[in-house]
Length: 376
Image (cartoon, rainbow, N blue to C red; front, side, top):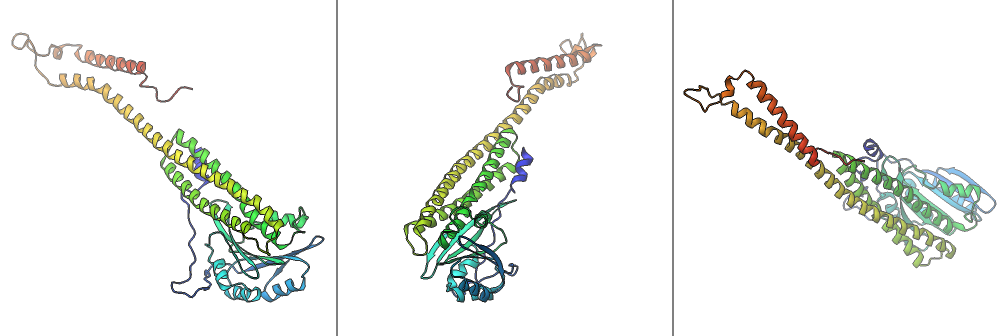
């Protein structure tokens, strides 16, 4: 059980280094890491009867494709931030403000929504459920007839949405760009549930370890879980507020039908918040269990040492008395130790000490002091 807990989650949560423009830089400065991946662009274009998925390499061909197919709904998916010129061209081609693009490329924005004349700018945070819990910013621009998403990594958080598009399930291919935007945000929120389930299983296993045999990793796992929950709560809280803003502030770019579906996603964020709050209480109780277990183990150690000391006290007394080496002479020293010259004195003393030890152990057992664990 203990090794399983160690393998499930690393002992420490590692927060990503934030990308910030240099101090004093002008607003709208695009800060891109040197090791950022080159942008990969795919466009999914669809209507009720047809769908196509193509890769594109430059902004001119992207805009030309969107303008050349006005009857279709388009999903422009951009993955990778390693080309500043590409993103500057995207700003010019689609009237995206440089401050918005700065937020896209920074990668550390909290979930939010901003409305402009031509589009809605929405930021979500997707949590990966891999070897470690990492969150990635997903930026979303909702226009009248198309949606643009930006991701730094190549992770595909929206496979269920793409599968619904390919198989034409539900109303996604009939409801336009705003419904596609809703489906993307809903997929991000739905991914919170398996993350919470995995964390809940980890806390259950950790509780078993704490009750059985807590070790030096237990406290680190408790603290790591607490930090994760604080981090997740900040994300989910902002996500809930963002969805609430979209529902309360009607926009012509987000239809009433999509807004109605968005209420269900809002309810999911409330459920996740409830789960996080309950896990925080469990984590606090795990700390109490850890302290109690450590104290109990210390008491057991002190109990063993006390019993050993108690056993040796009379033995030490006997050995000390007979180690004084007084001489015996029945004429001149009648009150000295006659056992020093007894042929069976050594055996008698050793036998007496063994009997004393046996009697002490029997007394301790009768009192229940030698029972280390509760019997099943």
